[in-house]
Image (cartoon, rainbow, N blue to C red; front, side, top):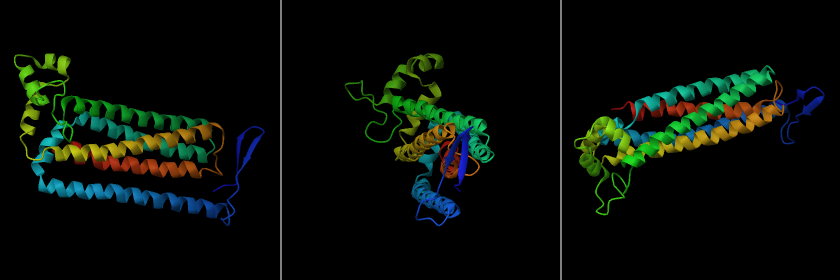
Length: 262
């Protein structure tokens, strides 16, 4: 809804409904319906990927069982906690704006952005490790590009692991003996790259939504600092909040489907 909001002493910002709406209430309800309609399209997009995931998982259960062991459950669980926390702070930001407690709203929006950045930093470490080891879909999977003979990355690592301790391997190549052993078994599983294909597409698409959401929340933060939102006008904050909650909800499904399926 939109009537007026006092940003600071002596500074009065008025909000009027657009000419094609009958009233502020009509504009508010239309905005809410619009964001929910948009989120329905987002759910349909991810829904198609989830259906494809289930089909291929039923066709290649061994691929999913072995592939999930490539993922770091601690990273995934940490990101789950981070996003759940961000949902709480986003909801609190809306609540505090409705109460006209601007400082607390700004604080909650800032924490939400920090959680989004934390999520993406963890994903960076996950992705970079997989690229380093070669557990990626496509022609570069397990390929050692520094080797003129195009020896597979896992074959090179197996040779270099002979006579070395787990600590030495971690320091020199960033992998453990257990991971090398698992990779050497995984590469013999038929169509093993399918799991990684779904992993990178679905988590990458979700990560893109996290970045977009963080940018939108930053936009809200700037407007909140300028005193543009208050008890009488908070529609953009609520709309972005709905988007952010859906993004968090999708990750709650992605985490067990990839990290815990094995």
